[in-house]
Amino acid sequence: MKRTYILLASALAGAASGLAIAGPAIASARGGAAKARASSAAKVELRHTRLGSILVSASGFTLYDFTRDRSDEDSCVKIHDCAKAWPPLETSGKPVAGPGVKASLLSTIRLPNGARQVTYAGHALYTYVGDSAPGETSYVGVNAFGGDWDALSAAGRQLE
Figure 1 (spheres, rainbow, N blue to C red):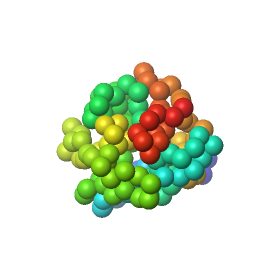
Figure 2 (tube, rainbow, N blue to C red; figure 1 turned 120 degrees about the vertical axis):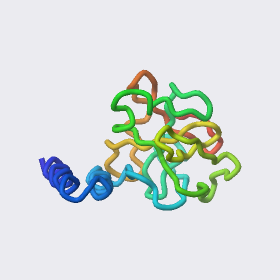
Figure 3 (cartoon, rainbow, N blue to C red; figure 1 turned 135 degrees about the vertical axis):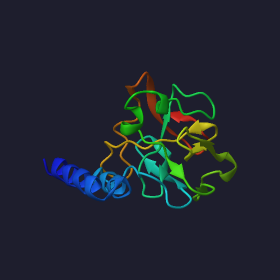
Figure 4 (cartoon, rainbow, N blue to C red; figure 1 turned 90 degrees about the vertical axis):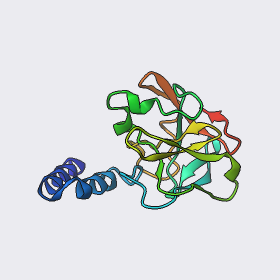
C-alpha cells in the first residue's frame, strides 16, 4: 500500500513538473533495482550468492540475462511491458568492471530510444523491478515474456 502511494505521488509530481523528475522517483520507489537512466558509467561487479558468484550492479542487485535474446541484442524492448519489469542496465559511458569481472567481456548495444545497454559476453544485461534487496536471486530462472531470466557468472555462463 505504501509503495502505491509513493508511485502515485511520483506520477502527480511528474505531471506537474515533467517526466524528467518522475522517472527517477519511480525508479527509487522500486527499491533501487532499476534506474530510469544511468547518469555515469555503469559498474558491473561480482557477488557471492546461493548460486555462486554472479554479476550484479554497482548497488549489488542481480543482473539478468534473457534467454530469448540473441548475441548483442535486446529483444525485451520489443515486447509490450517487458522493459517495465526487466529494465535494461543502461550506461552513459564505457561500462566499468569491478574485481573479478572481465573488462574484455563488457560492451554496449544501442537501444531504439538511443540509450546504451550494457552487455557481458554478448548477453544484454537487465535488472528486475521485483528485487527488493541486493543479492536477491529468487527471480533467477523465472520464465516470463517468452524466455527465462538467468544470472551470469564471471565467465559469462548462464546460471539458473
